[in-house]
Image (cartoon, rainbow, N blue to C red; front, side, top):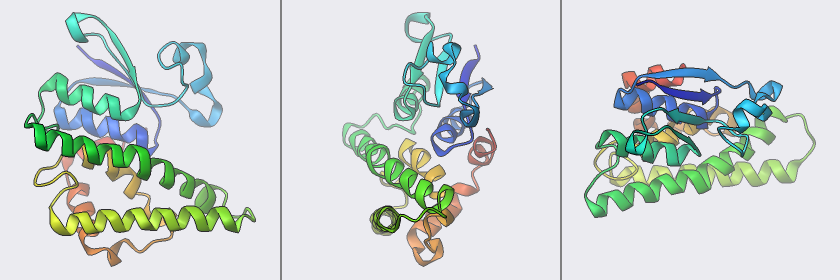
Length: 208
């Protein structure tokens, strides 16, 4: 049965469309225009009371019952487990490393890059040098953490592409908004170019 994806063209939204493409599950896209506050509609709030995209409704959830789910990281874990995908390893050590780097994205890359997007791109004409310096510096620090990690291993969680990479890629795709030269980070640049070429990523990034 087809999963309903409620999304918009943001990094968080594109995590889930990439994941659905990677695991090969059929899905229908329902655009939620956050620019016109559609996320506050009663229909969407019934799916996600936190009024954020993305969200999914799986008509064939656990026990064959429908499941509504929000929070992009939780959705990635759910879809990996539903399909028994190697994108979330079963080996305990590798699994926890994957979840560690997923949480790194959820707790660091997403919030800090999001603030950098706001102050350096959407509100770049605002006279707020403190905020701009703060979020630019923290975004650049996180880029450095990823580049160092990717000097040691091919992917964020180790030797294999995983949900940690899927979660992080759409945020790094907006590197130009963060006033950084991605090519100066040779390991992260290599990772980014490789993932950019994946067919599922190309298709998932086009969803809005």
